[in-house]
Image 1 (cartoon, rainbow, N blue to C red):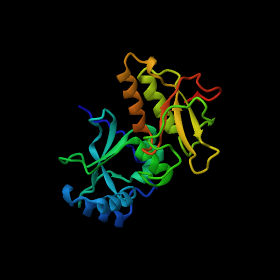
Image 2: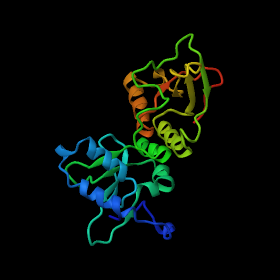
Image 3: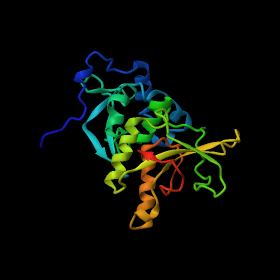
Image 4: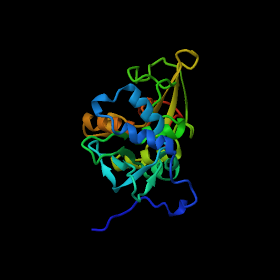
Length: 248
């Protein structure tokens, strides 16, 4: 059986393929910490260094995770061996985001050291952090329907919220699962109240488009894999709001 290599670095021969040496040493040290000893400090140091360190692409480049989504497999760099270097930060725009994959690190071990969803990588590309705690997006436990008398503003998410590569991945994913002509808009809520203003993404997806409520919930949940974790999003009837939805 022939091995298919998705990652071709030949066009980037003049780029700095190797990451930050100091960050690589830090990451390699962290990998030796037993899982039960990995506390919040370990997590913070790991996340501060992993994007710019040198990793290697595993021999099996892509794996489908238990969640059904595809992940590039990266491993800690071996000593005194030739390997295909991979620096996450340098490969997001030109390679990872257009492919629509997440990243899993050291899956060859009993437990992977870390798994980044596609949305985690999108967030790093946009904000240079994998996870964002404070944002203008609605909190997950807040109301996810539009109130009858609620005042809202509608528009389209800018590239800084939803890059073109992400739109493409979402559109192809939804089309594959039967959501044809997917559309999107950005809702600004409580926009007159600076303290309580929030925003949500909305998709033209509603339960009666699917055979079962479970199918609808599965699709809506899966959308979250493609988005930064702090993003809030809802499904709305396409005609619920005038002139709001535009093609994804």
